Length: 454
Ligand SMILES: [Zn+2]
Image (tube, rainbow, N blue to C red; front, side, top):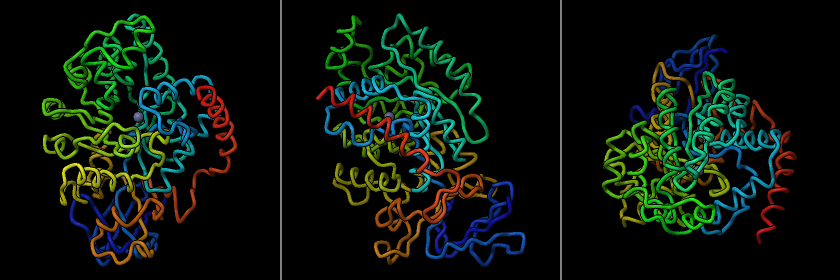
């Protein structure tokens, strides 16, 4: 790889104030050498100059929560109450029985969609190995949180054994850019025993942990009172549903998960005590405002979480609930919902949104020493957003332009560790056309499975 100097009308280093007419020099090893005003950056025959013109250049976006293998679910599960949404999703998944080629297609299309909107890294909670392979194939960066399910305490050790086998298989896909972690799915699919076993495994193997938690009302009813639709479903399977903890965060604390500084996905229902526990544990939150709104869960108290000292990053969740993977739009939605909730004109300002989609995301995935800001020595994960379009002009304030005028479709460049993966509408490592027919075959079986419940 040759050294390259990317120049743009604005550079947002995140580590410092926005720079006008500036650039980023990337060494042949894919690391950042220098960030600064155009005039101060070295030139020469050994350096490729890439002048992006009227554009905002910033760190590659970090989407801390996605489900790459669910790409074929987009639009399939509209308007269902959450307990039915999740049981229908799981039943359709089971009945459609995706082939490895179909899971690969779904994961590759998720990567394609992500790269085209400037996402360079994602945290993916997955029930297969497809996403790890897709990240490697496309050259993206990510952490794969291998999911484990099991509400029956009697089957906790069998579920753990299966998880260990999956983790061992995934190790062959892991490497410089792809890491492997674990995700005990959610309180309504995981027993306290299984949480405890996974916590001990994660500690022993030093694995990052992600958990869906404090998302739904039905989940809180189950954990706190042993009641509600999830409790009824478990009792129908012969499982007891005693109250388990005074809150979902308290359940994570009691089972040993919270001590592992997990990525807590959703955290919509977290009171002051929960927020204090999350902060004291050094946990991060994956805030998914669009998915939370579309499923009727409400609005997470992001401003209060941040005030308590919790690292809050942004996730799209899957296209089964969102149905887009546009992190710039997600950030705008996050701000709008906080401002509507608090009747505030200043909550979650754009400088905080910028941190949430970059450095806070890197922190949440344990990657802040390598990515998340433009600083010499860090890996050159970059994206650039064109701002010479009718809907982005004029750019009085680059942050307002980025989050409130531009869209993911204005991204013109995506780079991971110095390697260009997307440029001016073209994906350079994959051709989505190769996988589309495979995805449609899976989508047709999912639709048939969905149809039987209508
Ligand atoms: Zn999720």
